[in-house]
Length: 59
Image (cartoon, rainbow, N blue to C red; front, side, top):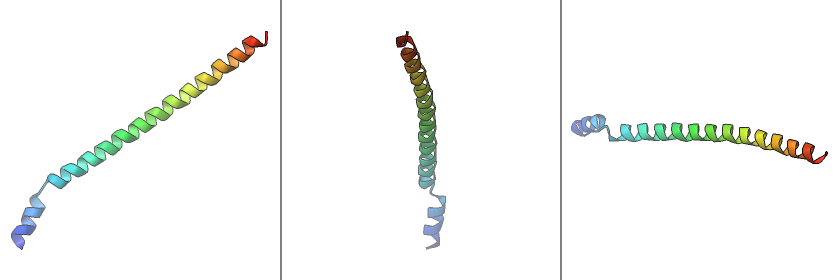
């Protein structure tokens, strides 16, 4: 039983999996943050263009 416990403690495959899960979660979080920033900028630009078009049509 002690040999089995030592073998389990020395195993590193699970630790690599945890590292990949954390790395993937960080990448997904970064992508969500980048998408949100781009979406907010695009919506602001869209509103500015729409307001300018309305202003131009008023003349």
